[in-house]
Amino acid sequence: MNTLIGLFIIAVGSFGQSSSYVPIKKVKDWSWESFWLTQGIFAWLIFPLIGALLAVPSGGSLGQILSVDTSAAFKAMFFGVLWGVGGLTFGLSMRYLGVALGQSIALGICSAFGTLIPALMGGTHLFRGEGLILLIGVCIMVAGISIIGYAGSLRARTMSEEDKKKAIKDFALKKGLLIALLCGVMSACFNLGLDAGEKLVVDGMNELFKKLPATLMVTCGGFLTNAAYCLYQNSKNKSFKDYGKSSLLTNNLLFCALAGLLWYSQFFGLSMGKSFLTPGSVMMAFSWCILMTLNITFSNIWGIILKEWKGVPKATIAVLVAGLVILIFSLVYPNL
Image (cartoon, rainbow, N blue to C red; front, side):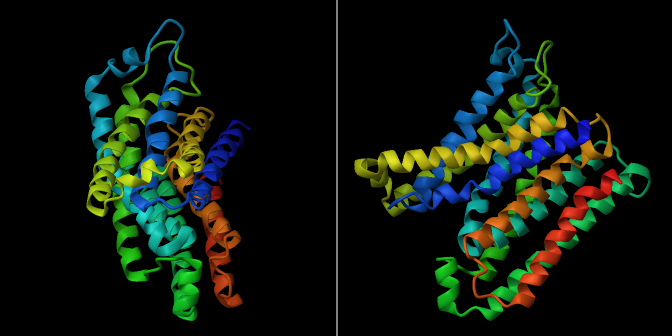
C-alpha cells in the first residue's frame, strides 16, 4: 500500500510538470529568453526555497542543514550547473519539436542516464539480481520512448510545412533532435545532484521533505547556467525592454509563476513519494525513471490536447499509443 501511495504522489507531481508548458503559452509579447528566465526564478529559486524550508526542524535553520556537509552541498550545486545546460536545452527542444516529441526524447534519455549512472556509482551489478531488474525496466522504458520517437518522425513525414508551423511555430526536426539528445544527457545530472546531496540531513527533519534542501542546491546551480544564457540573449537581442512592458507585466508574471510552480511540483512530489518507498529497494532505485516516464506519458497527452497531432493518420496515432502502453508497463515491471 505504501508503494502505491508513493507512486500516486510522484504521479501527481509529474502531471504538474507536464502541464507547466501550458501556462507559458499565455505569456504575451515576450522573447523566449525573457519568459524562460522569469519562470526560472520561480521554478529554480523561489519555490525550491519554500520547499527546502519545509524540511527545517523546529528550532533549526536551513543554513544548518546546508552546512552539515558543505562538500555535499557544493557537489549538488555543481551537478545543478551541468543540469542547467539540460534545463536550458529542454526549453529549446519544446520550441523545435513541440511538447509531446520534445519531452519524450529528452526525458527518455535523461531517465536512462539518471537511473543507471547512480546505480553503477553505488556498486549495483546490472546483470544480476535487482540490478538486472532495474536494467530491464529501463530498457522497456527506452523501447517505449523509441516507438514514440518513431511516431514523431511519421508525423513529420505526413505533415505539410504549413501544418508543422501551425502546430509548432518553430518546428525543426533535425535541430530539435540534436538539442533533445544533449538535453537528455545533461538533465540526468539532476539525479546525480540529488544523490550528492543525500548527506544534507539533520535530526528532526520531516521524512516527507528531507530531500528538498538537496533539490534547492541543484536548482540553484541550474539557475546560474540558465540566467547567464538568458541575460546574454537579452543583451544580444536587445530584449531587456520586455521587462519594462508594464501593461503585460502582471499577466506574464502570473503565468510564469504558475509555470514555475507546476514545474517544481515534480521534485516536491518525488521527495514526498520516495518517503513511502522501501529504502534500498528496486522501486527506490527506479523512482527517477518512474518520474521521467510519467512526465513523458502526461506530456504526450497534453500534446494531443494541444492538437500537436491534429491531422495525423490513425496509423501514426496507433504507434504513439503503443509506445505509451509500453511506457506504462515499464512502471509496473519492477514491482512484479
